[in-house]
Figure 1: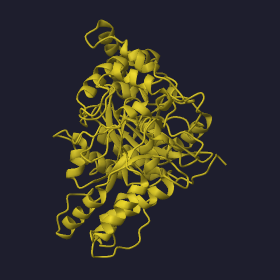
Figure 2: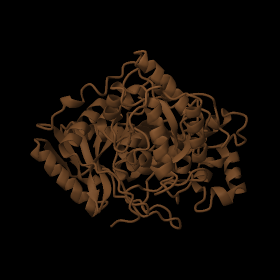
Figure 3: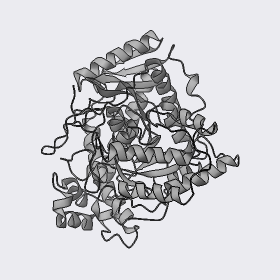
Figure 4: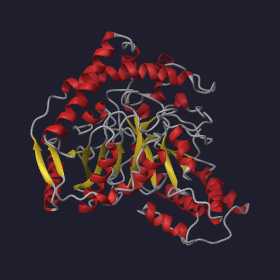
Length: 513
């Protein structure tokens, strides 16, 4: 079961009393709003150790995640985090640095497996014993790069694919995650805990996952940089799946630089570029950006901030090209839904069959039965109509699935390629979505729309960067580029970020003032 915060303090105390703390007494460190560069500078100067850094984050988690504002963003703490930090401090003292993530605590969304002694649950009680004793390849790469897996973050249960009436940010294991900008507001899904935790400086960075909007929406709503890379750039092995044609992990951070460092470490393609190296090489002057008007209009406040951002980009020399019409995405969305249900059944059955024997639900059908049997805990607010529809969906060899696949991914790729070429633009930009809605336990999400579907279905890069706030609630600007143009998206996003400096830290208010 997940490690409690009381257990965290027992771990800290036992490690300290056993003499595991470094001989050097590092400075008192407040991790609030500290960047990767800030922390690495302190580590390199001997002003901070990784062990004391982990302790500082654990103290902050206890203070504001499990008490105080009670954000409820972290579902489990890694009991080995301090021991791992101590070992990495030894390596640093010996001059053995693994790279910019050496000794840096990060968080994983709780659908990503890690070798640590904590379960991977997807927020479901059916997987409370899913301790697989294996790292997802992206986690193995992070560990090799010196990152410390601090713990797992809460999420919309089953990555928001269980019910069409779901409450984003809620899971049976983790409960309800709350927005640090206004606690009554939603966190969006499904990487909600990752978004909240990094907005609240509970770790340096986090890894989220997306099928359609689950990195970019919680990032935008929580004032973060969130990057959904080209599908296939990062390995999906040992990550609880929905769709093999759309799923991907991705970084969530408080800056484009930090996100690019995390992406560098996770990339499993042998020919991947250095995503950090060229961040400062992109100027807004003369940069052609396609303004996707059909992907705005979801919220007047977000539209107003978008217009202000466009004016700032134009003043800095960007060339804005109006994209006033695009082909209807309603057919793409309809076909996407068919694809997701069929792939969910196929992929989840395969995943559950490969879990440890301690996991008793070993198929989607058994999972549906489990939820019915444990309805009081698993379904107090919403049901599982999407699971039931997936169970009845066509298999991957069927004509229905093949037709839907051709009319979703292929059509979305053709449409984005056409827009980028026709308007001769480096990227397409739009509001990432609306500000956070009020969490409603009775009626579910009040989702107004976003820019996520086209790049999600196409499998193309989609970056969101903070562009300002509406009544104190963050909104983001989306940057969409072509397939494998991940570096270009990050470079453009970095240029926009540095020009606008729009991110504001959370204030932990109960409601919008």
